[in-house]
Length: 266
Ligand code: DGL
Image 1 (cartoon, rainbow, N blue to C red):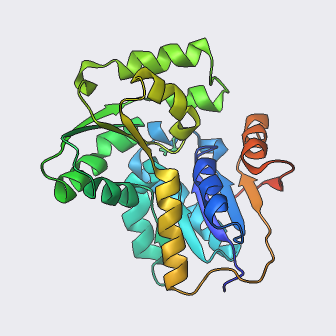
Image 2 (cartoon, rainbow, N blue to C red; image 1 turned 30 degrees about the vertical axis):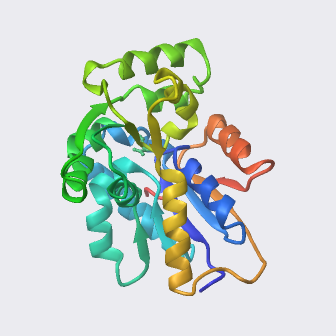
């Protein structure tokens, strides 16, 4: 069991930000990653569709012996976490990306914070309701920023186009006076620096990658599931091959990666 990989999924490259953070603190772990590029972006899909994709992907990752499943996508965490737990709880451990961030905010004393994410994540109200429970005195402003995922997946980062789009979203009046901004989408850490710059680096920009990687380490330690064999193999699957996925994965994982297309929908 200890040698089995950590299963991770997202709609595309976003979950790689979480996978990368896991590698930083758990270099001895093997990863199996699934990017559902055929259905990207999840943020525009219905909760039902995302649930269906998430269940299929979880089955695939379990067939590949994942010892734990990490939903490295906020849209899927908001739509499918509860139903995945219901279906797979007796087979594996399931971790999402929203609860760990909410818990982190609960340890801080912010007066006003912002959350940005996909239309699916923001309209679900998941962050707002969970934050209200853990931190009732913190005012929470949510904003859907749907152009950011297609922009990132098309490779528009660190350029004038992306700066203009990010600025247009983040200059929304509702965000004025925030002390922290939650990146409620795992794609957004790729443009974290551009986002911080809009706020002149005066706002704490919170992304889930490091926080979730820390939670995963605690869970594996507690369950005595850390891989101590010294053998590590990472595998990457996509449902539709894109050169951009490969490029970003190579950037995060420095060098050649074991990338395959998996058709799990038939
Ligand atoms: N990275 C995802 C998230 O955290 C998915 C974005 C999308 O596919 O729209 O929500």
